Amino acid sequence: MTQSTRSFSDIRKALLAREEVALVDVREEAPFAESHPLFAANIPLSKLELEVFSRIPRRDTAVTLYDNGEGLAEVALERLTSLGYSNVKLLEGGLQGWGDAGGELFIDVNVPSKAFGELVEHHRHTPSLAAEEVKQLLDAKADVVVLDARRFDEYQTMSIPTGVSVPGAELVLRARELAPDPKTRIIVNCAGRTRSIIGTQSLVNAGLPNPISALRNGTIGWLLAGQTLDHGQSRRFPEVKEATRQTARSDARHVADRAGVKRARRAELKAWQADTARTTYLFDVRTPEEYEAGHVPGARSTPGGQLVQETDHYASVRGARIVLVDDDGVRANMSASWLAQLGWEVFVIDDLRAGDFSEKGAWNAPVPTPWQVEEITADTLRQWQQHAGVAVLDFTASANYVKQHIPGAWWTLRADLSNALRKIPAAERYVLTCGSSKLARLAVPEVEALTGKPVFLLKDGTASWMAAGYELEQGETHLASPRIDRYRRPYEGTEAPREAMQAYLDWEFGLVEQLGRDGTHGFHVI
Image 1 (spheres, rainbow, N blue to C red):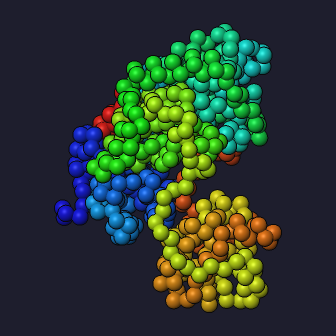
Image 2 (image 1 turned 90 degrees about the horizontal axis):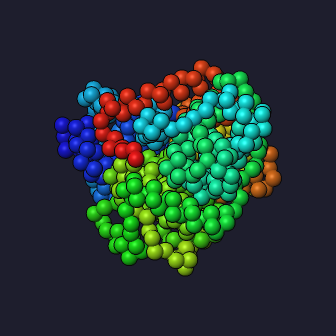
Image 3 (image 1 turned 135 degrees about the vertical axis):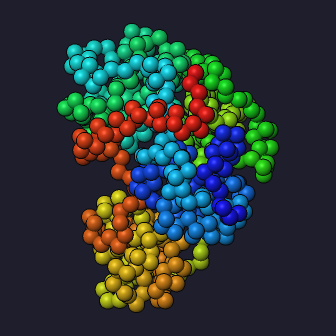
């Protein structure tokens, strides 16, 4: 083994010792979902520069990169080194080496959280009802409320009839308002299993007096039972009374204390943010709307339910310190209670005042200083397209491209550029775009180097073309790269085949056993 690699046993030792570990899979999401170690974070090479500063904020973190023999990890190592990361190595033998050394390999995405959800149900026997039982209750007009613990956009796509959108971290704060009578049955659902288990157990842990159950297997279970989902619903949780908030605050604090959540003050947060020896993540777990209205400077907006579901995406350094903030002590404490059980050192800041939420607007990921490139307007591109010799390369997510794109534009994966350019007819000049132009900007010097031709950036991306009112094209009209940038989850949308949905559930049921074989998780269930 050379000094430029780390072995499976190096990573395993660090995980067991609770040291900081950033094990990064630089492939696209679809191949990542086919096979990866439990605590691998997926940061595709295609968008590495746009994500790495927020996901691995400390530049001397021990970062270990791998792929499955595609040669992407070596390129990623060069890029991270040029961005100032000083302790980057390759995983010995790549993904294959991990498996050959006896490392457990997992499929799907957000596996730590999903496996943990199964562990929670296994230990706590979280109450659940089958889809058929829930439908009977609804048909009988029983005293029941259905709370959907997913993001609002997922709820809008498909939902259980009568369901109300209450994303996970909001449940303990809002449920008493939605079911004030302790005899009202509360049913929590998500698309599959994890968020309904965690949501239901949150309400149980917080001591709500109502009968509470998860919808077993979520919307997947509903569809597999041959039942019909609603689409396009917009029922959302109401505001809560101050008395409800006070009760929820006390409940959440009690749960967090039982889980081992630590307490901190603003002065400690300031010291941690200046500490160069340890990674600290600062997350605001309220709703995005509340965050934008005013947040603690430097905090990232991560609604609590999604943070617990996608911890590997937001906190990609296992063993780092996580600090949570909110303005009521409910959402931060409930989210923290789960992160603590997931094996994180997690703190809630207790002495925040209204004036501390001084920064307004959406969160913007920190990115490297952008390349200075020559930009053109949508009007100019339209004129150029009326003559031959221009090729448009679109680097947006493939799903966005299929939905709508500039006529004739080629969908291209940045990490696949050299292959893609062999499929795209040679042009005298190239124009690059994506939704906003941020990702396309990074590709300008790469396309110049590969083609030797002038390369331009569409100013403000495809959004500017749409704003100009120009026509758009739909579908997979010009794919220069394979659509591997996103793993198609068996529980999303409405078109998933029954076999895929059932196979997904079967896989989730097997996660507890897989966690046992892996042996590095460090989870505990209160």
